Image (cartoon, rainbow, N blue to C red; front, side, top):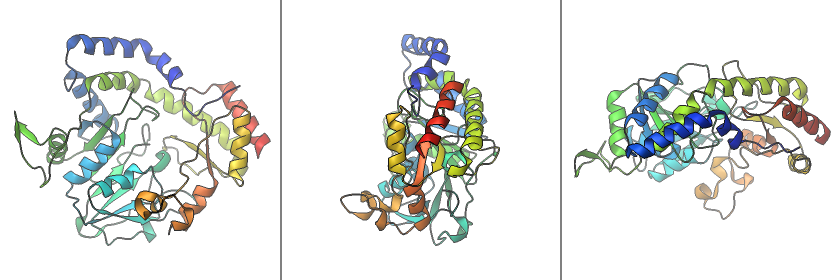
Length: 355
């Protein structure tokens, strides 16, 4: 039996009729940028994530970049980010010429250790990694906090801390498009408008372009085809989350000795993570048996070549020991919303046999 980390074809089959109907309507309409599908999705996403305003963008990375720009982050400023996240979190800071200040994670879970985090910063990005709530430090002087909620589709904790939220709608996310897509969310209408203008070249009137929040804009817009696809998938989100939680409960019971990450009832199960010794050998055994796995993440962000300037990522370059320990032992196993009972049982059997 083969069990993959994600099954996008099975996911599509569940919503194929609605997706294909909506896509055909967009193609026949000739309205490919903006339009009613984008507006409908923005409203639905704002309601789902409990914000007032949502702005569709070209990717989650651009949501981070434009969100930080709109919040006033500039070259030379210092921005707190946790050591564990997908690299886009730090990349957005670097892209703006600002300096990421890395905070270590907690000893028992890969969320920022808010009590030990540096606070002499101009802004911060909080990451609710794997859909689990992260504590956020109190920043001095009202410094802005942007929440990276890329892995939080379906969580039940209410609004995350922060001025605004940015998320990716990449295909492998719990709520994913058929290509790149992203969203910026906020309660501040002026902030939402700044992000929207930044994403359309700072254009305030036809062929009239100005600076927004003191900076230049770019091109980052959610196209109507992706919005149509996401609307169909959004209708299936509650089922996916429920199924992920059922799978996670089964794993918790059977694999408790492998230190699965602690979780709260409202957590979104974006990835199910075990912590195992001799991880690479265990992963090889899973692969031989047809069970997919993944490592999130092999290196803390402060050890990445783009940060250190070294030619290859090196765990010893990190100054975040808890993050390093997690990177050495973490192993994700399949827990997606289309995993069957038979597949989940096979994953459990194979993991027990391989550890």
